[in-house]
Length: 242
Length: 390
Image (cartoon, rainbow over all chains, first blue to last red; front, side, top):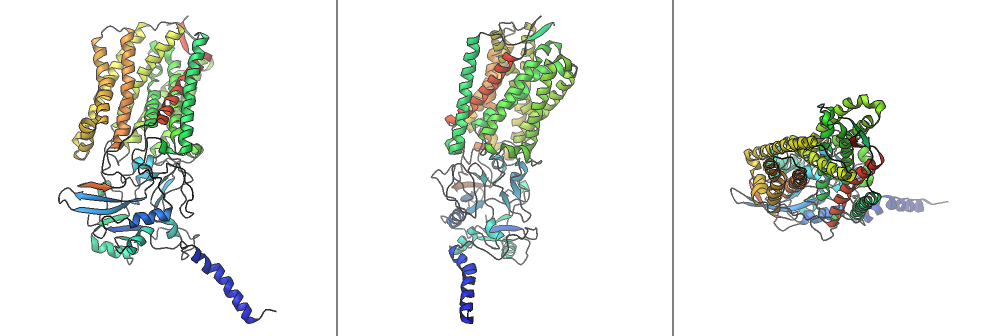
């Protein structure tokens, strides 16, 4: 016979093992949204970058992206993958210098998806543009087509990859707005977290369809613009104060 | 003209010597590709800035030639020029051989060539690349049937119809090849429909030149003489194609120069692009177009030697032309921030991108080209392709 006290202790232990321990072992479990839930167009994920808050020399967003997605370089910058990079630009008219992160702009009309022969480059209904690593043949036509040079080709054999970001030699890859986190219910990306933790808060990620979301309110007050608006690609990444 | 078709009757040593030499080059190509795939593309000169390199120059040149060498057969079938009829089977054979070679190079340069089956079964019909997969495989099938109708008397009545179909198909095919670049809005050097007719005229020119060179080699091996009428007519064709190529090249650059936002890339290619400017003026324009044109026009007599020299210059110049289009177009940095100058970037956004091909890319390109020649050699030795007087 098991007494009530032992029963409660054992039950609590079992519950702890089932739910608490995994979250202590991995900090990458975001169990708010079940994975099986279908992606819908109710959300339209986007990013706003306030360049006035982006600090020259800070690489917190780049480092966080590299860690989140297991992007370890081989000491060959020309061929190493970069999903997000820092650029510094000077206005040709005012000579104002601006620094900002540049990544996949998650176009509504993505040229990479248009040109991909196998459809490996695709856009989800929630606006995330990404590469199916199982059907990418490594032709690099998407890299030719991207106006932002946002994509990288995996030039070398990879080892010890992160399970949350599968990658493959000979395939093309790019920022996927931390899709693994989003699909597990997270509402932030690694770059946004890192920028906030560094105390800059230049990056705001969120649902553009939700008018009450943080990104929507930031967008309202910042007069954001898209890069290469002349191409009418309707990107989901916006910049302010360039 | 009364003629019959024969196999190649060259001496065994010459055949086996050529076969082994070309076979060796093909093996080098395969080994280069295997090494690139095993190690990863970092061993090549290509990188995340110049994503298409020397293998693509070889592949596009060969595919353009594949379409162009069919000229001779098209003159016979589509335009009913009896003079070229004996040469039509050879012309179609060359087309199929160069097509295979170009495609093999493209496939072996893929990041995942093992996924060819994915490319053949999973299509995104909005992609011009996917259309090209259909255009290339369709061209292969049509050419195979065309050769069959020309070699088998029982089905020869279908030959003119299939020939006309092949002619139409190859025009669409080269339009597709040109559009691979023409449909790219991201890069200033591309993004114009003029590239499609430019590629068509390039194919007509390079293809005719390649046909003439191969015809001369085969006639030498077979110990037959090419009728003067053929040489005279091919020479006329080459002069017309040279003029047409110059016209479309000027049109392409004038179009870009007229669009203000394209002036920077034009300045890069035409004036201050270093090696790319040199390749354009000396290679593409000088060696590939002007010198052959002046040379041919100043040599009124249609002697054989000037035409073969002209053809060689055209092909070398053509290789440079494709290189300027493919590499030059990528070397010029993307205009991500109009009205701004990028002063710092960890991804090389702020400068001209350099490219030095690796030995493996040369290996793959030369190996692929040798494959086309070995296919031709084996088939003309074993099947009756070469015309001779009855």
